[in-house]
Image (cartoon, rainbow, N blue to C red; front, side):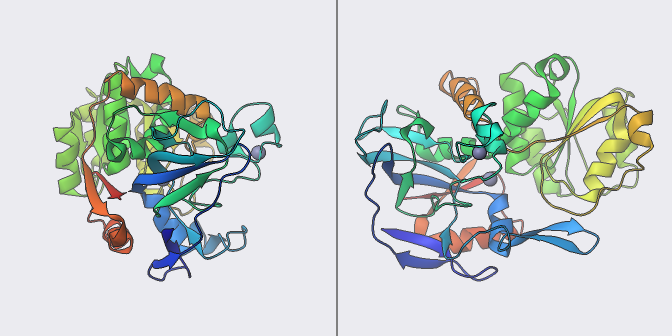
Length: 353
Ligand SMILES: [Zn+2]
Ligand SMILES: [Zn+2]
């Protein structure tokens, strides 16, 4: 099999020929039809996250071994399976749930929240992912039938879809159906978040982005307003767009000091700041304001397998307006990753076989 691997951090992806795995037990081998290129792949490729105050989280120290194949948004066709793989059929197309846990820690065993596993085995992060022509999935239970839907349209739901779905679940339908939500960042995640709000009868969103092209994309996708986060009066503009009222919830898909502080400043007492983005840096809020405003600051990381199934039900019921997907050949993996790093991708880039 061919895969496009990280052989060294911050170095071009390299095409490698590796033996095609033979599935054992409950394992499944899929032929990859589509692999989404996600912004978090840039952090993996760079080998770490900025923790602020001059510190970084090193993925090497976290046990990520090279070479590795990225790609956690994968859809494909089942071509082989072990004798214990149940509930799937050869020749059919599936979305792969990549946020796989160890199966032993409290998050995995007690809460069914493998995405919060203490020793994660995420595909495309800790185990080889979808920037390849084949992918070994450790258990058939992580495959979700997509029927006749286009794998390239479906692949991004495994990360950008479930991540925004999980963040919206933390805001809660009671809140987002009654009040507009502020979304920081109008890239692929922002557009997905808009689509999921609409699919769940949301009251709409005020989107913030510093890029005029992305603000336009957000307006085209039905945002109530799109505001330049770099404007000195950005907070006042957000409040004005919300009818002069402070907002109930902010979903920060960027996760930079500038976006979290802007979100913080626009929230009503008791409001929720859900942080999803991994841009990095140090928290900028005065701690005393957190209790004084009784704010809830919540981190959200992808979503559970149950959430993945709930989301795919919305997709299959045709409730979600598809976000723009741009298809590229698998061989362009490195080029696509570079354009994403340079901020040149609108919507979602997907590698297709
Ligand atoms: Zn991702
Ligand atoms: Zn676990």
